[in-house]
Image 1 (tube, rainbow, N blue to C red):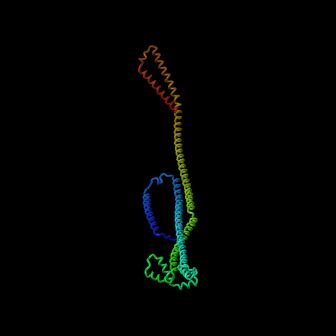
Image 2 (cartoon, helix red, strand yellow):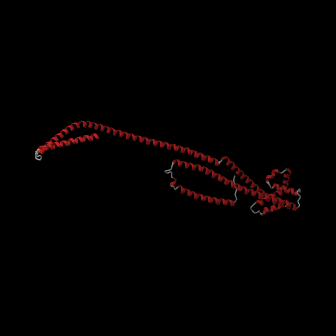
Length: 376
């Protein structure tokens, strides 16, 4: 279906289209500029993949709803425009209907003015000619009416030329006007004036019919839009798609959570395995240390056993040396008390005594060493 619009409306639409095209170009440039610009906040760096997936799903779901809403808004706008045009057409049809009705009243007033009887032949011929001016009514003529029209050749030709003159936007030529005047002589003045008014009425009736037909087409389109809208349920479908997207996103998020849990379990298992290995190594090292300590202990115990045997011999020798030393000391004391010069004692005797004391010190050192080993 095509919608015809007047010149002024065409100019308005062309201006609007030019403005829209200019705005679209500007928007396109801006879109390219935005496309070539990267915002750090838009980059999925260090973002939680689950939260990112949820945001993406929400954007997709919202897009379904927005697109459906936008489509519904555009459809509402189109329907509003059609309703406005319908009102305009109905107003136009009503105005032309009133003008046509006014011409009918003018013809009736003209009949009374000229004193023509309603059942006279003059009136009947006029009504037949006015009926014949409408091509759609030709099939409704009776045989008598068709025969009478055949007899009214000049009157019918006059009526045809008159219709051309009134509908034409070009000036009537002198030859055509002369022919019209010549044919007009076959009609009475009342008939000629009435036929002119009738032509005007035909124009108004045609305009009324065109407006009604156009309005009927628009009404059909409006009805089709309503039916299609009920059939497709864009908003309901968009809501369903949005729910499907969110449901799918939920399943994917669950999958991500499961994967994350698996990764966490694997990481925990790996940490536990490493910890167990570390403990095993530490235990092995501890066991090695214990073995070394045990070996050292056994060694010490052996040394202690040896040392426990040696102190008896050393102690016996030490006691013997002490006895000797005491005896020597006592001897020297006795010598001193007996008036002997101890200071004048021979160097050989002193050396022997000194050697005896040195041996006693060595024996004492050995005993201390054995005591230290026992403590270890």
